[in-house]
Image 1 (tube, rainbow, N blue to C red):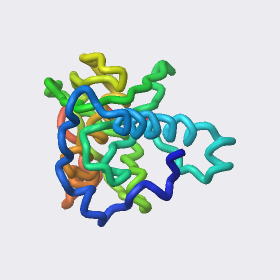
Image 2 (image 1 turned 45 degrees about the vertical axis):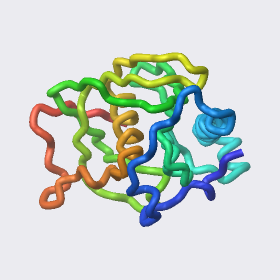
Image 3 (image 1 turned 90 degrees about the horizontal axis):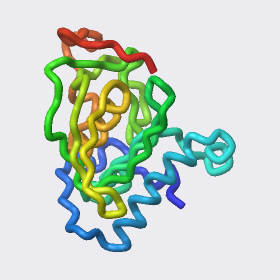
Image 4 (image 1 turned 60 degrees about the vertical axis):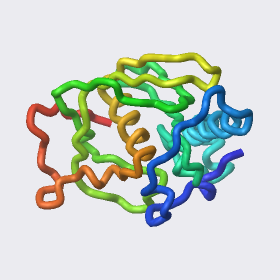
Length: 184
């Protein structure tokens, strides 16, 4: 079982590397790693399990965060309507996005960052992502709101980008032009 201790922290060189594409079909080890990443997120959101295993709650996890420099992400989050989105994906790629921006009013956090980072992180309000599921199925996901933000955060990890790289250094609480505020 994946634990919080296996998540590497900011400053680790793997977090700044571009992750490698996963050859398809994935190996059993790659599938197991991806399934463990998703299970971590599910377990971390269950208060009893999280307390028992001292898991830090998360909604997304990218393979580089567990020191596996491969293009794999897991996302487990309920959207603004309460609908659950649960994905274990290989080689996710944003193929299109809106002009309109969005941002979380509370700012973003990260399982690899053990400190509060103040500021708004501008993201696209809507994205279309193509990827391969852990079962080998090609998917095209049209995402918006909170789920779109989580996907952009995780895909950034695959490119060696941290969320705070997007925060305006001169004015951390600058509201991006034409941006939708998203409550969390």
